[in-house]
Length: 147
Image 1: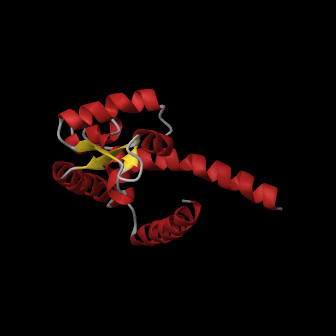
Image 2: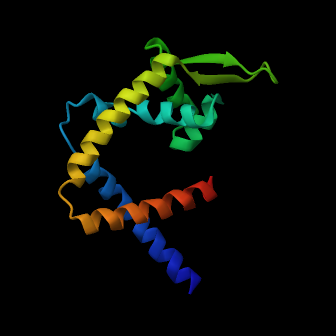
């Protein structure tokens, strides 16, 4: 019974990708959508949520190799969105932290993304909105347990 349910969960999880694509569909030139495509938004969200982290820890959460993460982090540093800081407990560890400019970027892009999602959700009935809201509440609770 458990194997059947976990198989169904796996199949359901694969449906999340097209759902996210539909929810975040909009003008390809929109800066909020561009930040989703180039990982900027995701990296900054991780840093905002988790605090200072080594590059490898950020990469693990995004399933990106450390050598590829270095390129992303260097670009974000050049834009002033993050900075490197030596870990107080272990000076060999270099952590990445989000700057105030990075927090502002995240806030602005987040507002833009919410507008896009809200516009796409406006096509649904009130009942569908309620159902989706309930499902996301459950998913949010479970994700917290998995983290």
